[in-house]
Length: 369
Ligand code: G6P
Image 1 (cartoon, rainbow, N blue to C red):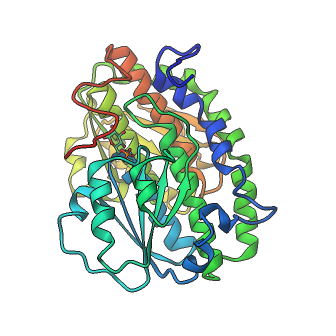
Image 2: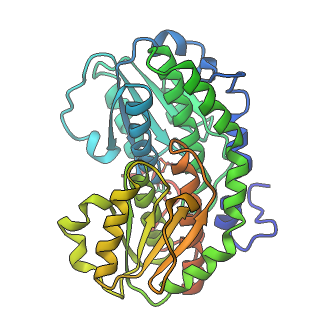
Image 3: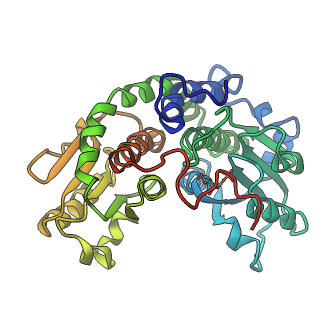
């Protein structure tokens, strides 16, 4: 079953389309009527979570981007300070551990050498304990961590990670809600509302997948380009990083992601009609700022590809191509807005004729340094 592409041309496309169902599976058994169930993280979770004051997240690649999204959630919803670092840096530097810090590793495979080494080093560094968010129950990372939250993405064959990322985000949002409640910093009403929104998420993801054909048409704008820029603000910044990573990995087009507010500190010098600028722009309190960033791109003759909901009010014109996304709450928006960027990378790679599932020089799981 694992090695069957079904009706899809590539594993990556199949895995993109599996996201509504694997997100559903990752939620199953973890939600009560109005709350996230603490037991989802293991029997010791309740005792441990009530002591947590800080989080140290460590991961690599796409899993690192999931950790970056989680930092916004943990600080804004749970009031828990959070640091996120790539494992290959964390493992080799002297780290100052703040009291009551939970060490969290994120990994699809649970076998990435740098992430495992970081966890092993962390054992003697005075952390409160360790939690693995992982897709493989039998992995070293799960075996060696105190607590585990398994993502139920199923086997991921495409080297470029897709469904593992969105299920990690779901797991990290569950963690945020569980910690927020344990610390008394998340109001019951807000938790109830987010639990309801999580229940509706698979339907929203399905709606986005039905826009595939439009994304496929947008992909044509990239087939002769060599460079591109991805912009986002807030939780959409790591989404932009992940979108750029997908495009690099499978289409070999150079893609850089920037928090949109940094545009004027460098990348604006690169913008011209040969460099498409992709923007993830859900309507939120940063939208007006983002719109003025887009204006800066337009003024330099840049071509914009914008993923936004109707409420954002971004108009389609000669150089601005808008893909209309379903409306979703700000908190869940990074999960939803990841999908069109995955599809974009996929369809650009198809146009370029690259080996989508096995990009050159990359491996699915990097188990040696
Ligand atoms: C490799 C894969 C990426 C993945 C990264 C981390 O580079 O190609 O898709 O994000 O490793 O892997 P992990 O299994 O730890 O999430």
